[in-house]
Length: 253
Length: 253
Image (cartoon, rainbow over all chains, first blue to last red; front, side, top):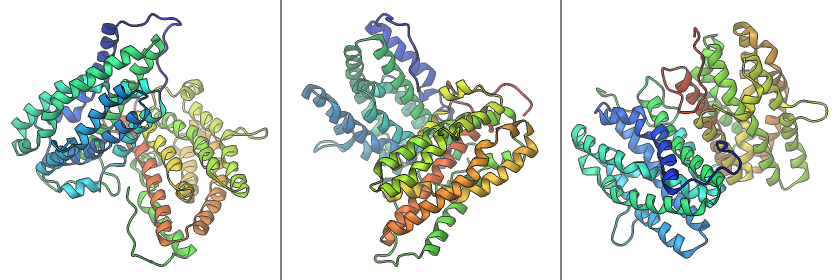
């Protein structure tokens, strides 16, 4: 995706202007507006649809520490790598914490899926894999600045997670035992976003670089959005899961 | 996607058995069965829907010689590279031929799109880019055997293209001036498939390698299928093109 053109020698955005520009991307493209999430929050998803979501999003969750390890491998400074390493720990766990991947499996189990089957990835939509793998492509092939900027959806995730936890407890009480993942992200994501936005502001030395960073966030939003499109099309619309994909059990939806 | 497990020391498939196994993948997963194509062949697509298809598939076409150049760069033998180089020529052209990308642009123009806009890629669905980029991931990251095997959808394309040309002339006569791409593929694809299946048979030394090759074809089919899912969802179902994507003009569909 070509970066939006700005005038030659356009003035560097201030921190507040850059943050406002990034927030505007979120308003337009972050997946809080996606109809699959709207249905989720209105209590209109069936158990099978929530299972399809938990299963597919597990692939995303499982790739996040790989994505962050790629960024880690590209960070030239110990101080950067120490800060970024926290993300790998947050997802993979350590001696004192089980980590986000394990917590996501608990959510999948609460939805009624078997954790081993979720971990094996059987029945994940190809479109989910393609979208998530593009996130790896971005952090491998673009500049470190753009790789860091692609994480900035974390600027928006706290509000979405707060709403989601409330709505899940209300509409899907049988999921309530599986919300540890979201609980942890309420504090992790804002810390991570703060570091990343400061890094982007300090390391984007030209307006063009600020636009490249903004484009990376736009592309990351598309990656999240496309995952929900694929779920909606296969499991909500009278669509068709592709050959080999997870099929919902018959139930009152 | 994990390769299907076969018994330890399972017997190597003969050429005919391997070809039958590959053809069975096509029966199950090749996009000739996709509802978007069924609608196309029944004359039920609007001009706007065909434009969305031509626009999005241009991204696929434009990446094919890049995909083949990656394979070219991995081919250790001049004789292999000479054979594979033909594919790059077929798509990029030479002094005597305009090449497949140019021909696809003529199809897009016949549909009513502007060639420069198609070339710029504005409005292509993110899901199209993710699926196509996965094809590049596969030929970069898997073995050369698997990279070659992923091209084997060409075993199936002649029948589909023959049918498509007939149905396009019948239902969308205004597209008839743009069918040179398909005309050329009628002879190119079978030649390419013949080389590739012979290469796969000769270079897969174990049953496990034959299964890896089969899995690559399965994954390639998923890449084609997912592109049509994304089109169907955005432009046929009462879905929603994501922010920034091509929008159809109002018309009688």
